[in-house]
Length: 344
Image 1 (cartoon, rainbow, N blue to C red):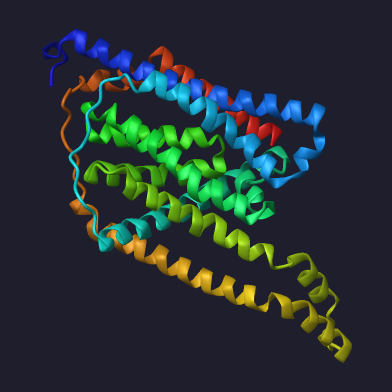
Image 2: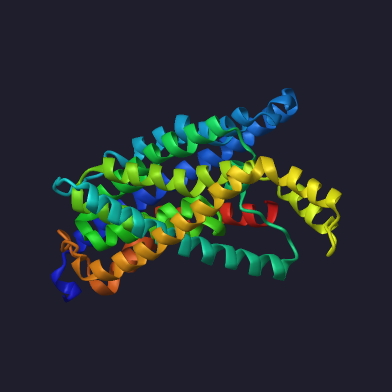
């Protein structure tokens, strides 16, 4: 469509809307990061013993987000005009289909993220770790479950699938899905999770638009965090890989009876968890294979509504991204990536 047929006032209004949204996300990121730094400094200065507890570390990382940053984001973003999709139900079979597709995309994204970070670590000579996986592996189970499975999905779905999508849907469901997934990925602040988050952000966004109900994506998010984070971390906590490797290295080709007894004594407490790890691996591979197959089978069923307000094609990208708010958002998120990359 010729841009001359689009009122300039509509284009400018769209730019202001995207700028406000980007500014809201930038403010949320800055407040979260600033709060974590401030509370971390206060704890280190006046109560360093708190930093040794799992519960406090979860509070330190999450409280600034949930108690301060999220309300500020809502104050900025909620007054914006919104366009909500019609509501429809999602039966168990369809929900499970989206879950399998999400698992397949998540594992593909994780593999890409890990490969990228391994390459960066090799080039820079640094040893950056996946801080989320490391935290889950070394944290209290109950604390991890409450934050990762119950709290995080609620806030993530409200922000990225409800508030952001509703306030960008007028410019096309494709735009809303892509933008919400991109912001969701950037908000994670590290390359380990970036590709993973972008991929499942696309799936969750699509589900939200097709059903108009955030409860379905909340359940998907909750299940994904449980299956991909909490369960494998709990299993691995109960497998002493260091001890197992030590015993195997000491095992000679012609093992003595004493060595075999030592190996058996080391393995015995881990057997249930080794079996659980094996079963978990099989189920995961099955879900990934099923997800890929279901995505291929259902790809032609994907449909997205046309924009209510159609931006000029040649100005769409610049209208969405080349404004103060979005530039600020990208700058803040880039800084978060840099901090995790060089200080992590």
